Every structure is written in structure tokens, then in C-alpha cells.
Image (cartoon, rainbow, N blue to C red; front, side, top):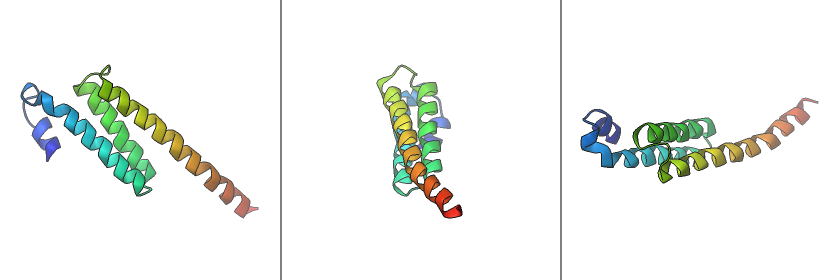
Length: 93
């Protein structure tokens, strides 16, 4: 609903709501990560960063934080995959 409100209307009128939508995308990523839906969580974090860069500005503190969250999530998910990949390789032998 927030996305429709913001993107379906005049941007200057809703400029103060832009960070709210970026944070909503981030929160969706957090929930998906918690549910172990890692690819979807990364996509949500990417959407938060992209939306923030385009509508808030790439130099804003919020966007910098969103970029850090994305980077950390990628690292964490990669670490979770490595033991699984090793286990699968061992099972094939």
C-alpha cells in the first residue's frame, strides 16, 4: 500500500515518505532472511538500496546503511552455503 501511495503519486508531495518505503523493503529482507529464504532476502535488500539511491540519494546515511546490510547479508549467506556445499560434495563420494 505504501508503494502504491508513494510511486503512484507526485514525488515532491511524498518526498518525506521515501525513506519509509526503503526501510519497508529492508524489513522485508530481514523477514525473508529469518525464514531462510536467502535469495529472496538478498533481492529485497537490493531493492531497498536501489530505491534509496534513486529516491533519497546515494550519499545519504540511510542508503549507506542499507548498502552495509546488503553486503553483510551476502557474506553471511555465503558462509551458510559453504558448509552445505562441502556436505553435499562429501555425500556424493
